[in-house]
Image (cartoon, rainbow over all chains, first blue to last red; front, side):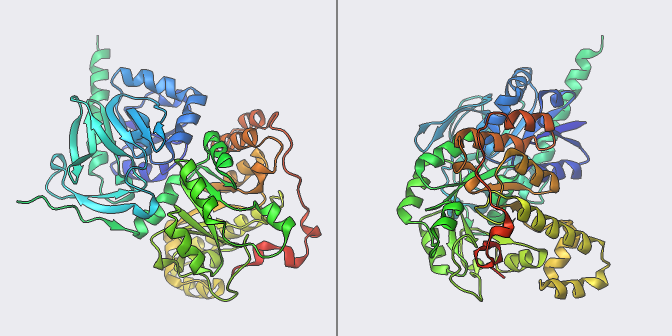
Length: 203
Length: 300
């Protein structure tokens, strides 16, 4: 199984390393053609405005949007979450939305500036009894979530790890820790997507 | 059981180096006004460096160059969503305290400003805000990391529009990293002594095959091809100082350098983005600079 990592800008290397540790074939995606044959795509942390702008220019935004409509699994971390959110707020009002797909409203940098960036431990029942160590870096905050959104993890009663069908998103960066469980959870989604596709193509 | 507030730990090495990881593959641009900061953000900069004057103007003005006026830093902080960096003089830990109080996202302890201390750099472990520092070789980079720098930029010669020094120092650092990775364990102590770097960090370089923190380049980058050159040589990302706002059409040049940094391996794209960006900044030949005008030699 091959999972792509969007490689426009940001912490691409860290996501690749996590996927490789899981035994998944990880490939970097910069152009629309590189989406072909993938079971899923991870969108890394970085600057959402930079990544969104360059995805639009290369046609990757439209190509990925079309694939997501067919249930193609996507996991967005931090900036990646902003790219898949249906609504985005900036400090000065509405901020551009990019792909959408995940029925949440996120507020950019709403946990504060870099000096307020932090690490913490949160329980995530779906991943077992061990808490997940989370790294928040100028993180986006989920300020509202629609009824179809399933909250997997919370920090102080606010959602920080959510899913909706094939889409997974976190305000934080599991790729900056040694914990592979969230990537494994996403790889399982990707495997289901790939197997469903294979079943469909059998006459 | 009562729900307790989660313990939040701020200013950790993880969040300091982590922000630099998020900047990789991006371009950080010097700006002197909120308007310039917006142009940079709209062109796709991953961060801006708030300054009172760009290096070319510092060079032209002469005199003592200091931390920017807090009013400028505040105005730029308020203008953009992307991270804002600002420069403190080498060794001037009070300028750094002021910049931390202003909540800049990164402090550059920079040779572009006039050094405040000719012996000691800032003890960067004392701060919650992360630091980026300049280096011309592996020893200098590792000494800065030992002092708490969470990101390194190899130095060029700022404000010249001439990429030659940036190339020299990036090649030097990468060449010295290759020496470390090729050396057997028993030679690392002697290499550490030669570089004037802590042995523990030399061991980390050998393990990782690169600097232990994100490694950008700075100084003299003036065109999209310059940016792509530094990326092909192995930089994690680019600082552009005078190259944007001293060019004829800053918005177009900013956008072109961002695109060339992404598509650094694609000459057709670099050709396309280099077309009609207008005149790059005028450059300076190194031999025309008096030794006392070379900023790169500040820092030790």
